[in-house]
Length: 146
Image (cartoon, rainbow, N blue to C red; front, side, top):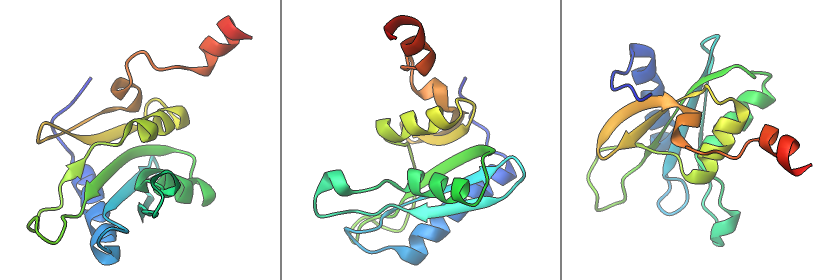
């Protein structure tokens, strides 16, 4: 179920994503920033890494999630991502929606992680699993395929 109201903590998380991408922006190399907040309030952020070969690129979301998990934070609560504008796009750093692969990863980590995302220019938030209707799950595999 989507919600349209961000809390002050949600807004601060979006600002952290903006901070990390602004401080580390390199055109055509690092233009997406992501920030995650744990249930205990810790925040981890990262930028994506663009490679010359697209398949080798890594989105900001898994880097931020991996940083949190590597620090022992397994209680991810909320994630938000933003995109730095290119040189001719103005100054706005909007919230963006995670790509399909990142949606899978986030919901695999925990279906109840809240994702702050863009929907037709409107910032919303919802549970990760709600961004993937009909999601493939391990229990289906165990029940039907093994």
